Image 1: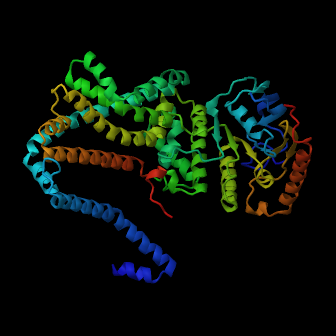
Image 2 (image 1 turned 180 degrees about the vertical axis):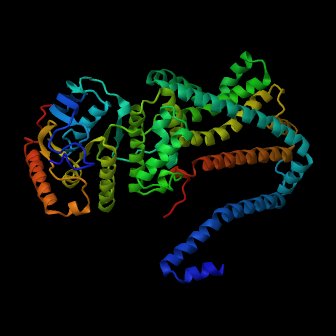
Length: 283
Length: 275
């Protein structure tokens, strides 16, 4: 601390102000959202108390937390079911998205022919497609996976396709001059060049596969066969068990945030040495 | 004339075995622009040849034709009787360093060998030797963004030279560098050229650079791109900092400069290509 202050003392006022500003911003990035969150929870609690709201309408935060602990067994086993669908569908989205992107990259004609269909699949609401899937697919897990996959694969496909086509022209010439085969060009040039784009798509797809899994469970939940978090929410809704509803909702949110953070970390670790997006700003 | 100077590559006076001849080469792009028109040019083994000219004179196009990255609309490229290029003998250095940003220096230099199936272990001695030649020993694990512009260009040159090419094609490689760095790279390039006896075709828009480096300077004119005049730079190698400040160098620069001005003035009007 003293070392920093001494350092600051030797700086002119403008630079010293900048150093202080940077330090404040670093702390603020964490403290501010946390403070707002705590404030909001406190306000939520007060509103419940002041208006005497019954807990089956709006439970107090403490009650929600209590439910999270009391129903932990039930909720977490459901979370596990949802997570399984989420990760499997994300995995399939990666395989499918990257696979299709590589296929598209082989020829402009293939891309022109098939890309519009990927868009059609993307823009049609999954809730509207589900009844069809319900008719054609028997296996419950397969239904859910298919739904979550349709939602999640597009950002990966679209981003990876863009990345594979964004290779520096001179680098392409350099590979040509060195007699690189198609496979070598893909392996050593186009795939690494597409990596930042792919990772950007992956971050979006991670969240979407969770949403896809939950939405699919919701639609499937109407038939009462699912055991994921969404069906817990539906069930709790029928029983006016608002505390459990909130607990499940919080669990889903936190899972989404966690998925995003993990994918961001992976992206950072892969890109930190070379890509602009991951470099530390040196003013 | 310096055939007797040891280490000096083929004489500056135009002798030495022919490597490549462009005969009546023309290139018209699909948008109707005539990039090159009826170019005759002989490139001799071991020469350092510069293509000098204003932008739009087709010097980069000529280089791409030689590299086989484009095909001529008319005329032929005669590689000692063969019209096809053996690409394993040609290396290209682009205006930008054109490195793989995700790969470290070693992997970047290894790349051309890797594409030919040479393993890392087998390539290592050659790669390390090349890095030493361009004064980058100790930087093999740095990634391009950690290097300065001049160092990146050195990596690019090392990568081009790692396959021991017979022809090195360079497209304004030092144009984006500061003068001090450019001088250093000029010196190092000449040293490399004298040691390895390869042929260089060097595209530049700098009179001073072309005169300093080359045994021959081909001055080109624009609209349509064509050869305006060839100059023999009759000064002995090795050329160093002393040469750079010598009256002989100044006189040669002045001569080349006059020819270049003539080439620029020969362009009749801004819309000559008729499209």
